[in-house]
Length: 216
Image 1: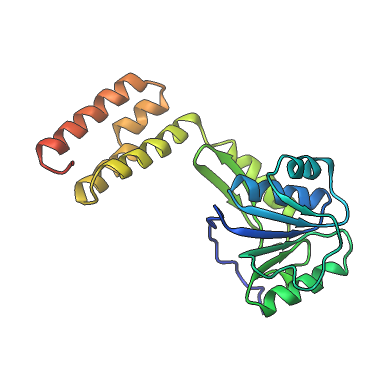
Image 2 (image 1 turned 90 degrees about the vertical axis):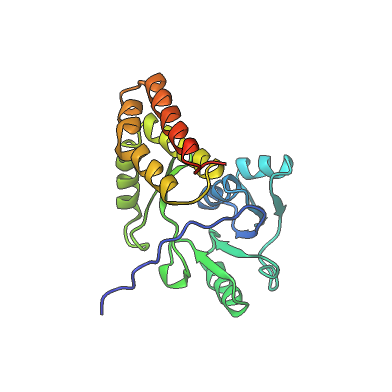
């Protein structure tokens, strides 16, 4: 039987409580990613890297300097197990699953309800590569190659599209404009670095929408 295929999602962790069990190098990487996403992070570990200690001192995360204990997963939306002691992960996973909390256990795919992709970011654009936990090194290689292909004009297009979505009413004309933004002259002008010409073309498009009554 072939291995299961992951269902890719991008989680919104802003304001969500996340438990991280472990304080080593792998745990540090997990912690930085959670904080970048706006999660409310609690770290449980007798020891912690200098970076984790600094973040705790700055109040950016809560560090409980002790071993994992039963009940620690309670009240969290997500649990990450990355303890150096291999005996800890199964205990964390068992308790989290018993309470219906999704858990990821570093380097143990069978104890993961989800896997963590290799991630690259350029502004609002996120490139995430997953091998379902089978080949992290391959995921890192592909992530570097694909992230390098995200050019500055792609970031401009993403931000501009987001602005237009917030300011234009939904409808066929907005859909047409957003598609043309990427595939038409405006995107081509931005790719060539001709921003003034791109803005002029966009203003003309918006003027046309306004005259047709599609804008507010």
